[in-house]
Image 1 (tube, chains in turn brown, orange):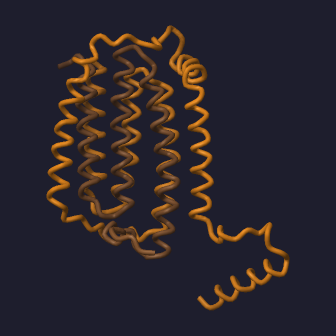
Image 2 (image 1 turned 30 degrees about the vertical axis):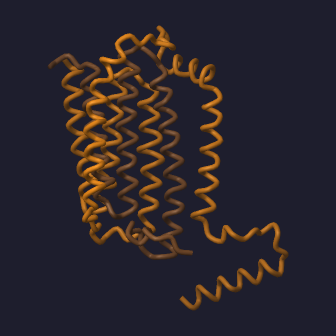
Image 3 (image 1 turned 45 degrees about the horizontal axis):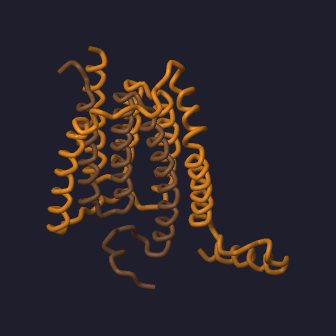
Length: 102
Length: 191
């Protein structure tokens, strides 16, 4: 109980990932959906860092860096598109995006 | 002992903060609790000895990403409540099964990975030095590709969110630019 092992971190990462999945499932607002994806990416980062520590290998941390870089660029492009959509349609609900019209 | 206390404290805090972030109906509460959760995650990286990753986490997430979200929220109407999806039963069932399988796979991963040998063992030097060594030798190409990707994302963000980005001032002559300015003034006066 008092000795923190790899499993503790993996369970924590799974719980956070499940919270993120719940967020993806129940959110309708696209901005809130982005928040949930950030949670997913962060939970994966925790498990990468934990595995890197417990196996004494730096590769996990490298992957975590690339995940952070991808998350940053995803936010930049996603918010740009979201602002465009909001200017055009004046809301950012997912239901209005379910059909593709020109 | 202290490691355990810190782990349980920060685990509780991050789970609570992220839970609020996905369940709150107020966009502002969701944003601030997400920022808090991101900052608390930094503690795990420091407990695990990944100092540089922890610093990057603070700089990138709590600095850049949160500022971007706060900026983006100024465009949207955040005062009204966020409506929730009623939900497709099949999707919810599928994702629940997926997360259950994921849980089993993640927790049983150390059993499978028992005979893993470290490719890049963590040396005696500090974490930042070790990260630098591996990042600029083995992972140099992915690093450069990530840099290009960030540049592309920056340009895309500017072009998408900026005003009148479909026009090119260098391709227009003086008269056209003056006409455009006049139109802007008229629009402002009308509104």
